[in-house]
Structures are given as structure tokens and as C-alpha cells.
Length: 292
Image (tube, rainbow, N blue to C red; front, top):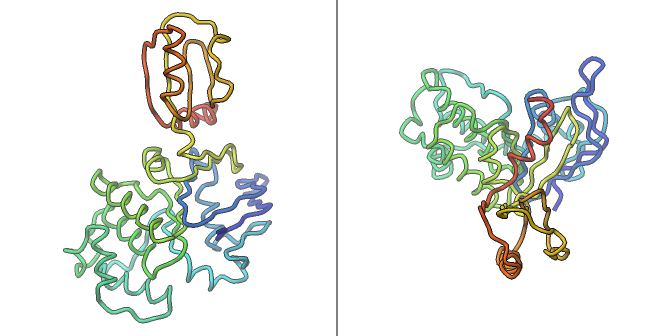
């Protein structure tokens, strides 16, 4: 089911388009990643989807409602962490999450199972009544993520959720994102953390200079790289019915590994090396090599 749709979106900074997207749809329950170098328009796109980037041309809708004209509907159904989280420094996690939850769903939320569960999800249960002025950058980022999921929004938008987060914190965030999908939410993540996107996303949108350079289905991009020893006649290896590319002595293959292995063995070809990997890092370098 489509939750958010984007059509003919253009956002300018001076004479330059920093976001220029013809069409993009986000469905639930799916996790989408937005991947690109600094300045590619990731955060600007997320702000526009949340309805807080007003200087744009085009159409952005949530549930067929314009995000600018129906901002109250969008804000009550969207939880977001964009760029750095901000807090009243003398509030506590419990007070802050309660406040966010009340603002999102219009109901006063007192301490209970739901609030405690959210704070525990980001591993800050023991600090729920401590003022946040003295929290570390990583702890504040985790509170920001807790605020994004408070109030049970149907869409969760996270901008660089693993920045300044340690390894244990990354594991927590990965688990939270997967749980949001299990609960039927739409999750959109902009990040440089390829490992995170590879682990949680269904699709990844490569954004280059504000435009969609490529959209990758993560599961379909799980690839076997088989390196053949020596040279071989490509015409002898009939792979027309499989998703295969042959480049030099390397076969790039998606699908049932046993199928291609049998064909290679039947031709008495010797395998020098086999790797199984997601190709996001390779696609990233291919698309953005001129910017690195």
C-alpha cells in the first residue's frame, strides 16, 4: 500500500536544483534507504516529505493528502529524526518522550508500559529520570530515535540514525527498524552506513545531485562472484536463462547457486574463488566515483 508519493519534485537553492525527482513511491510495510554522498539532497528530500521544506515545486502526498496543506495529519502520522536531535536540556527522557507522544496523538501519556518500552528499546531505561543536559551525543541520538517512534506513527523517517553511535547502539537501532517493519510501518532511512542499509532495507534509492541514479532491490542484489581459473570460452557456458554477467574471468550471478555450479563443473572449468556479497558498495563506487 502506497503511503507517500512524490511527483515532479524540484527544490532549488539559488540557481541549482538540489532535489529533482520525477516520481517516487514509498509503500508499507517496507524499509527504504536513501544513499548518496554529502550534498546529494538526502536530508532535503526527507524534510520535504515531512512537510517542513516548503520551498518546493511538485506534489508530495501522504495517504493522498498534500503534506503542506494537511500538515497536521502528516505530523501526527510521521515520526522523524532529521539531522541533529534537539531537546530542552533540563527535561528527562521520560518527560520528553511523553511530550512527543502527546503532541503526535493528542492524548496525554503518563508513564506506563508503552513509554517505558520505548525508552528501554534504546537502552536508556536506567536514565529515564535523569536530565538530558549531561547525556552523550550518542545517547541523545538514541533519544531522538525513541521520539521518532513515540505515539505509534505509521511512517518513521530517520536521517543518519547511526552517526555517533557505538557498535551496541547500532545493533539496537537495527533491531528497532526491523521491529517497526514487523509492526507494519513504513520506514525511510537516509544514511552513509551501507552495512545498516544492507541489513534492514528492502529497497535502496541512490541519490546523485538530487536525482535518482538507481533503485536497488536489496534481496535481488545478493550476488555470487565466481572467479574462473584461467581463460575460458564464454559461449560454452549457456547462462541465457539466468541473471548473469561475465566480466573477464569473473561470473556475477544472482539466484540458485547450485544451478550455475553444476554447469561450471560439467564444462570442467576450475573455480579459483567464490564470494557472496551484496553489491551496494560496488554500486555506490560505480555511481559516485566521479565525486569521491
